[in-house]
Image: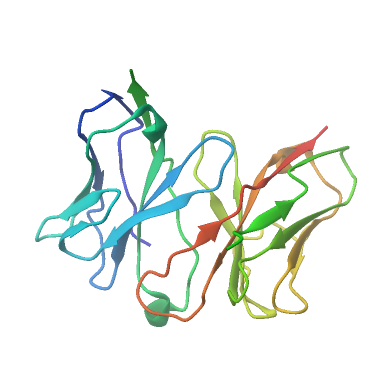
Length: 114
Length: 116
């Protein structure tokens, strides 16, 4: 399983754009990159997933360079409610490996200030 | 529709006791997962069910931990002879189980287990 490295914590202010970068130098050809968000006392929640280039949904954007050795989660105009832990995960589809479990690191604690 | 639910939300027990934690997955989801999360850490995989069978139990830490899913929906995680180190949040997740790339897992709120 590809190991991921992301900052332990980040601080921001309301209305700013936040970019969280995750390194995954040994990502495999079949691996996808997925980001989850976790609020205190709740389970993780899926944010976005991508394989290469850029993916955007109503919540965030995910930028993946050509070498796929890193990825950046971009949260536009954050609010106080975006304060949470953000996890970057890398793994192959279940069809390839038969393994469906997610491997979480320690995540990035984002604190949004007023 | 209803999400993944877990009961109880909190459980306090004494060292050496037996506990059961319940998970109700999203209706129709064939895949069910158990994770354990210690304070300040990301969730750690325990076991994965596809239907009624445990397809991957490689994350169970030892034989005191056991999980069942007899009818392919509700699952129970059972911990025998609890130890203080078992204290954690136990998370359950489910997914459609229809394969494909990077299937999304939907998590419940967790059960907070405290072993005194």
